[in-house]
Image 1 (tube, rainbow, N blue to C red):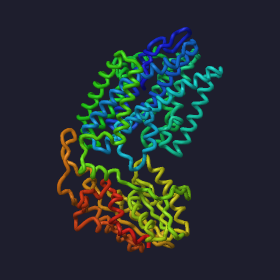
Image 2 (cartoon, one colour):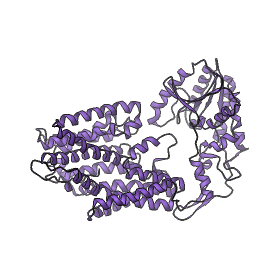
Image 3 (tube, rainbow, N blue to C red):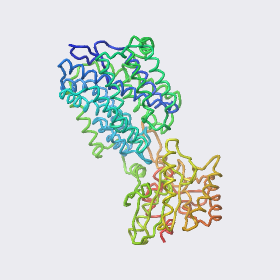
Image 4 (cartoon, rainbow, N blue to C red):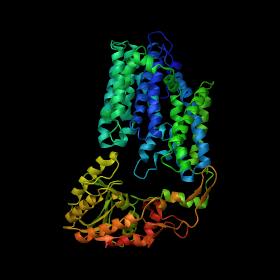
Length: 633
């Protein structure tokens, strides 16, 4: 992504892949960056993220070619290599990080500024992929609130730049066959990718182990070009057309519902392989990729990648909107392109790696201070702090022991008895865990609490109201729960979920399946159904602010009560009928929160009751949610 091959020519003694600047590779960069930008600004362009995979192959090709060419010329220097990497990557990265941090101090809330500082340090340290991998989960903040999230791919590339030259040097020193070793690394990585995409899709996406095969594909191509293998430039038009067809199929078929990278990643990777191997004289390469517009976009692709995400993210944060108006997004795309071009011009200015590393070090030190809360943003006072603290207030599974039973991760709080109470559901069940933990810790119950939950998954067999990319996980979870319910130690089952997900067509069929489920488990167990809490955007702490982040933020006054949705009341009545027919006991949290049609959202001391629009805070649950205590009797 950050390569600029015309600046990295080896000292020539033998043939090198960098003797001649290839306009088509810059054009190919444009083919990679435009879908990425399009996907971020218009998520309906669901396949745009595969542009990153095109960048990976290009980087593997250029870097491997540079190193091999210099090694074969006996002119390779690690110092020279890393000096060039720093002078290429750091200027734009420093400028974007500094600008993002300064604007963050002006517009962000304290917890957001801490997060920004953390991700800036991760981005500057080229470990963003590991940090994002570790953070991911149901209650992870929305992607656009992580202003350096896009640096995960730069992290993988930089990890490659650090490790690959060392490995190539070792292969060269020991006179091993580079091609076979590269293919072996690619095969191991691809195998890990195929395995991980099934067992741990998040790891497959962020891990350098499961991603480096894409860079190795570029490495194989670099060796082939350097040594003039017969297929290079042979049938160039056929190779180019075939490569474009693979890219087109990838862009048409791949979306977020696919298990990616997996086998799907071969489409953009091999498409890129064949386009580059065709050579710049192939008709499509010369006339399409070589046209002035695509080449220009390719030249600014690295700073454009760096700028476009924080530009979009800040616009969404300032407007407090997940989806901006079309005209607004078009303007922001042009702003990103202008900033990218100005940054590209800056990259041409003289600079030394020592100064760049020093500036980066200072910037990362400031980031560490922000992460440690030694630096506070402008929007920081006690009233704001109370509200923003609520947003991150979540204690599940704190105090519980993790166990894997029947192939499912469970969280258990052991009492003195063997009798178990199974808490089944999604995050709307998990929100009661702090109260259950408190009951057991205070010896008010001797029973053992077992939480079998999957955030975002309704516990109704055969009903999937989840996002497409979670259906497989939810289905596997429900199968394992059925096995768990056969355990004779479980005497009580408590079921809770975000029942308001059933709103809309088909909810009667879902309720019918829920009734069948209750009849099945009620045979030999005591069963409770917890009705859902009132929910909606008006309940979330983020709704308690007035004003504009660019000017002045104020706290709403008299924001103590809000309206209770009529659909939820009707749904609760329908569920009471089901409970009566199946002899399931009802637990209703609404009376503890609402009076008539008005529901409390803030305590008298100004502390929000909710973590967000649909989840209660542990602070409130531990003190006031005594309605759940009956299940532990």
